[in-house]
Amino acid sequence: MTAEATNPVPDGSLVLDAQRGRRAAREALARRYRRPAFLFAYQLLGNREDALDVAQDAMLKFFSTLGRFESSRPVQPWLFRIVRNRAFDHLRRQRVRRADSIDDPVHPLELAAPADAGPDLRAQKRELQARIWAAMHRLTEKQREILVLRDYQDLAYAEIATVLGIPKGTVMSRLHGARRALRAAIEELPGGANG
Image (cartoon, rainbow, N blue to C red; front, side, top):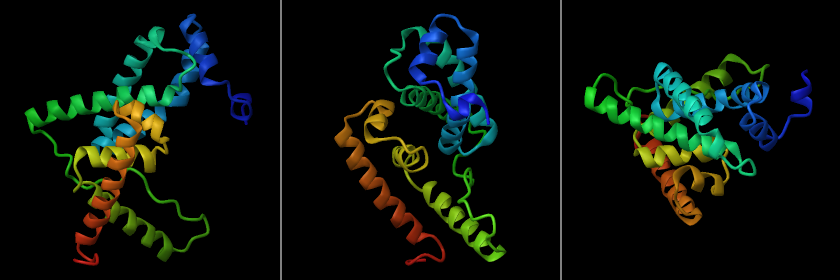
């Protein structure tokens, strides 16, 4: 186990050091946030290659604007706002080209089954995940985005408000509506309560 894993350097210290030009601090920030940026992009876009491109572009933007960032603020909401903007720019370009469709069912995250789980439990977990993602793709972008930020990225309401640039109360009402819409979409799928 590395020293950073047992005693991680706070984001604020890394940001200050990176702003002062310390390469090790920039690399530590990149290691810490590269995967969350990719996963968030993947959850928004549903395509691994597109998500890699968007996450890389967002990380470049993150570092190019680092000098303007206040080190006392949390990094993740700021970075996720950049990822979100880059992902939606990508989707707008993609709609013009009509090359790929976000409606293709994807399964970016699998529900974790215990290591000693039998094949039946693992199959049930995969089936549930497939149903959830199929239902997620029936939602609007705004609904899908807020569910991903809260339920998959585990951001607090205030952090989601920062990412989306909306009041905290709006986050709560949108999240409530998105969860209702997801529940309805799951029930409408074949094999659901109404399917």
